[in-house]
Length: 450
Image 1 (cartoon, one colour):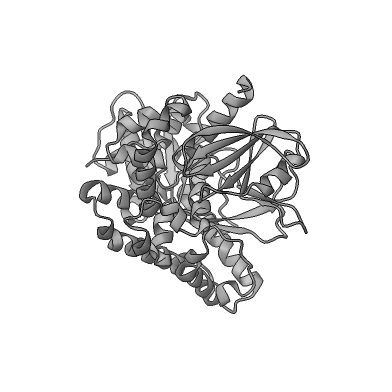
Image 2 (cartoon, rainbow, N blue to C red):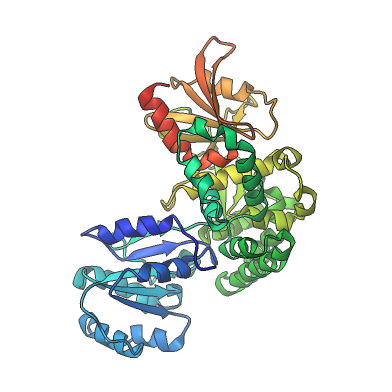
């Protein structure tokens, strides 16, 4: 099986078509498929040059003291390629290993705007010292994450279900069980391309153990390379060993997971893992209005970047394999984890944070809030069917919006709900497999009014 279709390719096409494109920095955790995607994208250029800064010979080329226009023919020659007429893409992989190459990016933009340049690497900000700053304003960023559910369906060859998902939401109802079955598989396997590819070939979940093990190990090894200081390395390794079990939970930094580590140490370690794009700390906001401002002084919720790794590390895979009501049997936390991951998967912006809503001293809390049009929309994730909506109603009473979302394992529907204070609002019930379409559905509702 070759490469399956990744949505980020569309974003790259848009970048390519932009007359004022800048060098593109592709950000993402290690092994989410950055190199594979760029190699695929490279086929659409007349010339494609791949350099990996972990390779000493490649690195040396970028450290030559020659003017940039003279460097280009040398780059072609070093790879033994002849230059054809037309477009050229240069891909600099693992760029964090060459401060010189990072510094060159701005000159590509200023001196050779006709050449397309993409750079990728892991943990970029961590290792980039004060001396080497990324050329601000002269590069563009694009985030790449594990496969979304839709990418997963494509990899499984379930194109007809993708077609059904592209129709009006109510059309999916007859296919609900089939879609839930696949979403369940996705929730167990996760979106790491290697795991997805293996599962597509073997259709055996247990054969993925070694894949997950290798991934976790490589993340731990990375911290050895990039993290300064023994203490911090220990804390990062501790989180990578034991933090997975807290996916979707509100956490306390001090003494996290009974580690005995201080709040500041744990905070520093989490920030490193956030930069490596392995997790996100989602903070609460108490305002129902735009802009959503995360309150960083309060307790965050921990969201990992891939639910397959969460299941593997937390050792809860055996109990969910073979059940159809996965989400009910699971702790509700995993349902929140996968919802956050899907919300994030549709978003290629860098540094765009998720948030949840929690009213101080009241106990009312809504799993996530997102902006849609002029409204802030609350999203409540419900694993079971008999969900209480108290917090959603408290939220709706404080806002002038009239739409709320419940993510659940039942088919798509829209209810009218009246809060105890007499406020009527539309409750959009979105099945898990439709999270990726949430923005489209909400915009449609706001413009059509139904």
